[in-house]
Image (cartoon, rainbow, N blue to C red; front, side, top):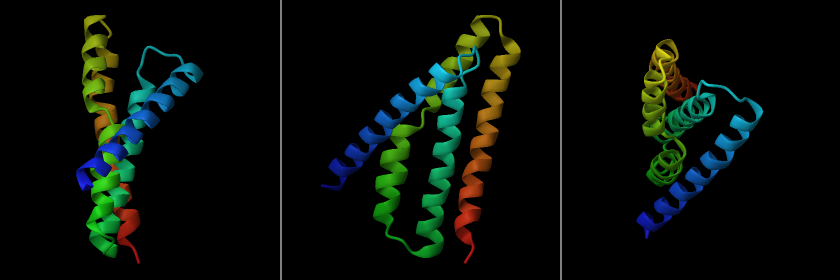
Length: 122
């Protein structure tokens, strides 16, 4: 049963990603994939918050499964980020490719850490 619910929250995360990606691309047209970067950074922050709530505040591990594994697993899209980086490099946009490879990765790690830090207090 839990696998079914995790799958459903993953589908919800993927749906939110699809809608948000379209809105960001519509409002901020650019060669740089800002939508994917935003999604991965915000998803990493949410994952840090969820991990912190489970680790530091003894919330049930089911929260980690449903939100962390399910929703965030469907919402974030590091494989798309990699494909976009390769596409930028193939187009000769090497600096943008490097920025896309490193920037969102570093910011995602920092966002996850910030989520953990936020929930570690108190």
